[in-house]
Length: 488
Image (cartoon, rainbow, N blue to C red):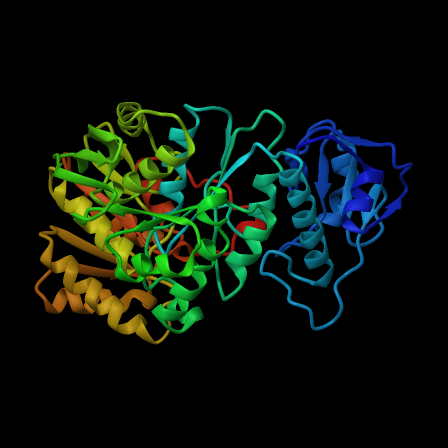
């Protein structure tokens, strides 16, 4: 972050100094986890699901924080912001009106940093699925052009987005932002925090239908990104998934120049001569207006081709990289965000395809297709897909039938919420076990040397425990409270 005194911070966010002279200088990172605070940092006190960040203010300052951004008095140098009035919108990441006010102040601070860095190139990415993987690919490409900031994992909401923006400083050339939505106006608000010059919409699927109500409503929300872009004569570029008609139609909602990326023959950036090897890795020829090059992805899954094409289109617009350089960077890219098509192998040769971070019907299809492409005998451990609303029963039944059609040796379905997957697969002739929890799922797998086991469900199912247990690992620490809410 650029340096600020607490007095300057208070003026920016409309707060008041508390137990501070105002001369305290923030020179480090902004953190909402007191354990991550470094000397000169700013600690953001937010209420969590189980604990309140205000209780850790003194701990953060003892660790070197220059001050605290808070909603109520703390025993430390702080900038206090007034809680939002009753009836004001309280985001999931805020938990109460005080937390919402702190989040609003954090967004204001982030916008100040963006405005103070006029040469910063901001890229925004959204879509129903593939956002995080595409964001990671874009970051891998742009890093070859200069210092790049991108969020870890899925830091894509009202907290994770400004937290990421505040990683930028005078040396940063590119900011890659992943933008999520749980309703209308959410992406527009995130774009106001860090106005993008380049925006990419990947797809519009069925994730979060339960919250949005219809695919049309999801498209309306995702399209807020292209509406926020500058006009073409001001350098705005909208990269749209060419293979999704709903996304391609967003060209009518933007004044930016439009670049289509996908497998469609008319796409500006497209893939031809695509193949998948026995490890589920795609090979294709990248075709662009600037030339062609062969790409050999190290990432698993044919769906990564879609992500790679969008990343290539963004890199062509944001950097001076050649097509050959882009192809090389795509081939060298490795997974950066956990539990997304991670492949682990046991000493006995059993491979585990851990895609347990989240799931929706589209990503389930992609994961099963990747499993089917890999050599060996296949087992899938699947859990429920959350937030599908009235379509949940039909979607789970369709997933069961799809699983039965892909040549699986065995299916293990975890949890009563996923019973529809088990019943539909069993009715279609597939050997399927319905088990109550992750521990029972591990016992039901019965993997043998050479087998490949896919583990996938919505994040709420916690099936990463299955993948870790199958590989002989231990359960990892819980997600930070503020980022537990999954967004799309």
